[in-house]
Figure 1 (cartoon, rainbow, N blue to C red):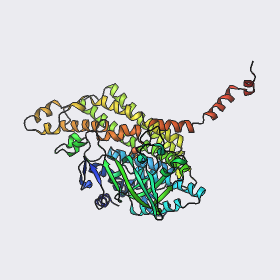
Figure 2 (figure 1 turned 90 degrees about the vertical axis):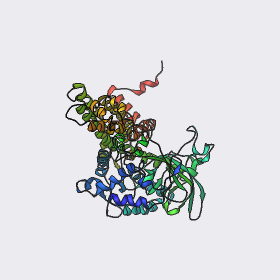
Figure 3 (figure 1 turned 120 degrees about the horizontal axis):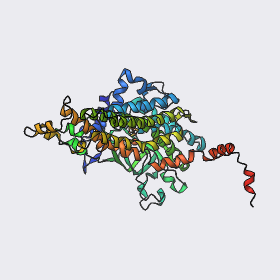
Figure 4 (figure 1 turned 120 degrees about the vertical axis):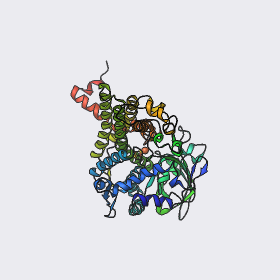
Length: 488
Ligand code: SF4
Ligand code: FE
């Protein structure tokens, strides 16, 4: 699809989206929603451009056709590296979350997991999933890969919750399919997606088997509706004449609470049904891919933030100060460290039993653990360089006002050669990325998206091979363990 066709395809859907307590009649043209849709549209637009085709498209192993890389199954480590580079590019072009990665990461995780479920249980999930993915590739769809359940009491398993709907579950099994109920929370890009592709959110035991479910439904399926998530400073997007104040008026990201109120799913769209011992594998693989993703997307957004900080320094007349130069070096060092991890976990990828490639799980988790820290430091340095004016500056309406505009122009001026409006625009962009709507994607999502810090530490503990490292130390230190047994 072209980007225009993508937008039109959403217009044709009967999406049920609530915002501020009201059902939105036309989400496509809603001023608070549209910038996030524009970000997804860039995944289509760049794929049309010759200079980006190598990164943005790939040859499908399923059909032999050229497909958007966001619908592709990684066939080798080069594909994994290109994925990260593509995400950095899109971060640079949107300075926001472009949302389509959750689907790509779900495709690759479900493809390999279903293969292994079938191997053990003689089921036909993999074949069903391949058929589904061909449909997605042929129609160039955006798919919301959905994992996170509301979870209720975090100390209790799904089946122990006082409200049984705190995790998405199978409420009925029929001859023609299943009926599901529950919700997925903070779903990136849900409103901009043609389909929702659901996975479980944690490893499960037998008593939780009704919750071990993976399936796909169209976003406008009967019983599916979404409640749009609020973001810091989001209503600026609804103000007239606030283009400067918004900071990034073209692009954004969003999350939504997606509710499944007894939704029927035909069998050909069910990819896991009660084989509870595979829930953990699906979670781990999806999370691994998405932790790799952050070594691309956050780096691209970081590039824009570093650039905006350097511009702010230029416009303040402070660019020559040594501490400013050093802060820009520090920001670059942190940002490129994130990228290094994203590339490294891709280069060290391995073939799965199903044939697609998976990242190195340890390195992907290290990548994401760094992402839970470095963007905060980069944002701190950006605010340091920008100065307090970034949050105390008058509005665009004041700047344009006949009577007081001239004062804003005069006193918000930095260096003589730079127009006051340009200075305001750059400062508002920094505000947007560090405190405004894009801060959702750059800051808090860096912490909690693709799993909170502790989730990576559990994986790092599991993958870190401490026993093997102890062995290395024993050899070097000439430890003789037989002596340990003799007690005096
Ligand atoms: Fe893609 Fe990054 Fe947004 Fe996840 S947070 S969907 S990886 S842009
Ligand atoms: Fe995310």
